[in-house]
Length: 474
Ligand SMILES: *[C@@H]1O[C@H](CO)[C@@H](O)[C@H](O)[C@H]1NC(C)=O
Ligand SMILES: *[C@@H]1O[C@H](CO)[C@@H](O)[C@H](O)[C@H]1NC(C)=O
Image (cartoon, rainbow, N blue to C red; front, side, top):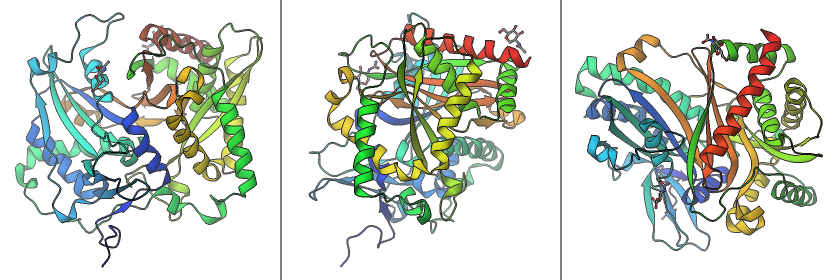
């Protein structure tokens, strides 16, 4: 008799990158949060119905992560909900007084209640599997509604990154809004409706979809050399100053925003240079980090590439899950003044050369191993900071030109999507979106390793560099 979950059609074991996230999340890295600020009170039952519909279309969202520590090596699987032992998702509601227990009136610098709730959720892991715990079985998706001061409401979705990369988050946002409206109009028939698409299975793991000519396999010797190069490089790179290496960590957020004029100019500069926005953001980050430091310094930048379109068979943005791979580049910043665009071209070229030689595929296993070795031996990293790079960002910017009328109808005032980094990770993780022509970049950092003041300063220096660089293209 088979006890293999895959044979039983009930789910599948996690792949290599998903496994790394399963290991990282209990430490505080990889808790994805999508936060909506609304000016109209959302109905918990409508939200629940809409989320159930989404779960029907995307089985990974209704799955649970199952941790098994019985076998010699601990293992994780996605269990699908088709056997109905997994309860439907329930939306948790918090009234104003319940919310206020998570709100501190005095923050210096000030932090909006919406952002405080977002940070509370980033610091809240439901997936605390540990090596010695029993079997655990935890949903990958949680939803809550918080009443906030000033007649506003926040809807928070919290997901395990193994089931939700940034492309998934962007698609989820696009698909969820129409469903919440549809439910209001069509009445509540959705709730009891049988699953129509329960036959659809959780998509395969990324490692099983890498085209063979791009080869994950590398010679043993080449692989060992790369690992040594990676660990020497990434554990000895220049860091931002650490303010408190001892305190218990949580993730906090600062925002880097450019208005339409400022964003247009930076984007025009990128077009002129034939680079993507990630090149300009990398450059501004490197320049802000290097500041007035003297002499050459080496910095690590991780760029995340959405692999969906290059997999075999290719996946679409509507295939939910984690299908990103990382490219780690090191950049030397010299003492002398350089222009934003010189640094941006250089940084982008390094990244795109790595991508052209399929480093994101060939090094996938090494990067995963590097993250796990840092988690297992924090002492390898400087001051046990667990920082593996200075910045992480995405190759492609999310463009959210959502239906304004629909957004007005639900009363959408603001949106933020990001993931926690207070376990292993960068000093600053950037989640950039172009919305109505403006750039909104949610920057997540580990606190108190870095302070809010420090990061606000960092981000405003970055903004100054981008705005000045953009003026060439006014
Ligand atoms: C983060 O969460 C942990 C455990 O849930 C809690 O003890 C800690 O106080 C929280 N930290 C912050 C800054 O919210
Ligand atoms: C954008 O911000 C600049 C300041 O950097 C300001 O001068 C300009 O008027 C703003 N433009 C728009 C369209 O808001």
